[in-house]
Length: 258
Image 1 (cartoon, rainbow, N blue to C red):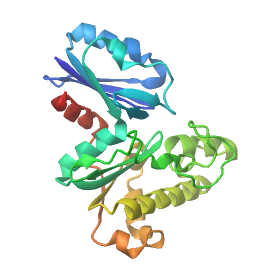
Image 2 (image 1 turned 135 degrees about the vertical axis):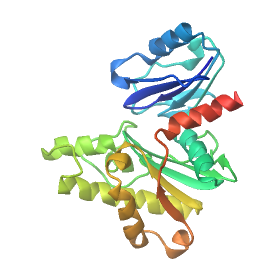
Image 3 (image 1 turned 45 degrees about the vertical axis):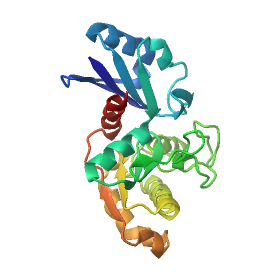
Image 4 (image 1 turned 180 degrees about the horizontal axis):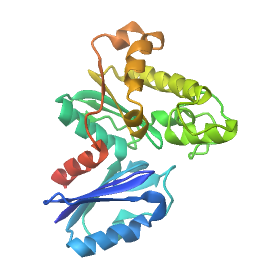
């Protein structure tokens, strides 16, 4: 038995391979180390692949702005592979859309992206390519999990929505005009930046915020020409993710390679 895991900022989701048994638990309410150890023992798991909402390099966690510190997959005691959640998601999106030239932009607890070039993720020197959420945007009156106060993630993410809501004394919702205006501008800035830098065939929008507000996809299609140069938009397809959990699907692809 093998185990695919999506360890995100909000949920820890898992699926057993083969068999397809699944489960989830709130990340904030569990010790991921102990929880996965229990699953491994209960189901006699022989290998695990983990999609992780943080910076990962060479099978090691570098940082996790939205997850409590202390998780170490090496201590699980079985063969494992751990990868950044957006790198996992973009592998799954590429398989789903049948494209090797694709950028995934996900707005959930945080804001992240990854890009496929010829079917493989663009990684950079330490696997940190695509950290769009931490690109400087404009200063906010509070700090990101990475320590900065000017990240795109402070505007175009679930965490950003919650922080602005507390600051302005509003409900943590995009129904609040003051919050939505900030969110939309940052999302469009992120999308335009990615298209200009990577020139993909597809731009796929996903993540929890997009899932709950699918109208944002049409907003991006309509308003993006105001933010991105014409050459970056020519021929690109902008779509909403069709996958229920692309990061978990990507972890399953990692299992194929383990």
